[in-house]
Length: 555
Ligand code: HEM
Ligand SMILES: *[C@@H]1O[C@H](CO)[C@@H](O)[C@H](O)[C@H]1NC(C)=O
Figure: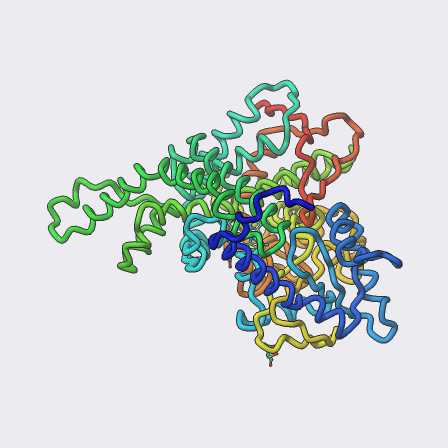
């Protein structure tokens, strides 16, 4: 039979070299045993989502679990406890499309995982792998040296009190824009309007006013997030060997969007750099002309970068890039949290809803009276003492957390990591996770776990003190929204836990308190059930189209 192409072409050196390269590349990957196949050979771990008689059970399970992750998690929980009659704390394999080889350890091992050093289990390696950072980000160095984490926990944490007046101003202004001032009921989309509230209050502490209101900046950031997420998901679906070949091409648009964001911020960053230099000139002559320093993330980061003396750290593109990274970590997550809280309040059934709202209004009023001179001004202390509001956020997040599997970490221990209860050796390269969705709903950890009990974590009324996350300062039995533990993985747990959570607690309490004092909130239709959460692969998010009816309260 004739070859359809001129066979000479196959003998050209370039083509030959290419073919040889491809064959050796593929052979290398095929010969490399996957960490999970090692595991299942050694321990015969149950595979969540596999059915008896499946061809390629692991592959079929990946698809099944992707499209119904909620039941996969329930099955994981059941298998972990029952598959081995001799050990009710078994590890299970949890295959899901687009995620690396997941090994889910039992609930009892959450503490163990959280305590592991980076040299045994690495959260960073997992996250950069899953987001394909080395392929998708124009400047992967931003994450290799994550100074923004320290700046968030120290400066943002420490300045939250001073930032309250700014946040109040922004909250009032954005609610006026989004929810209006009409005393008649209007129906609004919860997620879309609250996303604006969160974007503006969060960017306010990143960039200050008026830049936090610049739609071009918010939209440019959103375009990068969407692009990054989509491309990372796509690359995750591909067969590993193809990724480095295809990535440079398909990441061009998202890298261009990243540059667009950096360009939009450039004038402000340059202005701040000039101000900084003017302020730090040794002659006192010019000092008088300079504006007072801004109190926001850009400025803290700039000061930190200048102090490091490394020109890369204070280059305008690095400074803008860091804003994008923290916005990536903070804006969607916070938007989902407040949307769930508002839906939980609005869709509580009739007598209960008014009871929740009036209890919260009473607490807010009492705390404002106790902690501000005029009885109306929000202060950090007033916010900190609003324990019921804090509890509602914690409870709403418990039932609705985006995080459904927790503490995902890549095993980095050269000889693997041996676990105390499931008694396996996790091989290097495998990714461990622990239950989050099922732990949040575990009857061992919570009474009536499926019930929304807004004040579950607030046992005492408004306290004089009451820490924003510091358990020691709180009444016994209560739990702060921002406090983490094996029973509460919404912000992670251990050394890599979310550094933004103390800020979030204050920001969202302020937003909710403002909202409750100034608006009445009802479901779209009286008696209607709360719109169900949606699952996208491993993530649980609010119904994007859910609406609530709101009206401005008359003075
Ligand atoms: C309700 C809102 C939020 C939720 C539920 C949330 C949740 C999380 C979770 C689960 C992690 C991973 C922890 C781990 O690996 O164990 C994380 C990390 C992180 N979060 Fe948040 N977060 C929120 C808001 C924010 C905000 C507002 C900021 C910024 C101001 C922020 C900044 C970060 C950063 C920088 C990291 C990475 C930490 C690291 O790499 O070690 N987060 N967050
Ligand atoms: C880290 O892993 C090594 C090797 O498996 C083990 O000996 C060590 O105890 C682990 N560290 C912790 C804190 O468990």
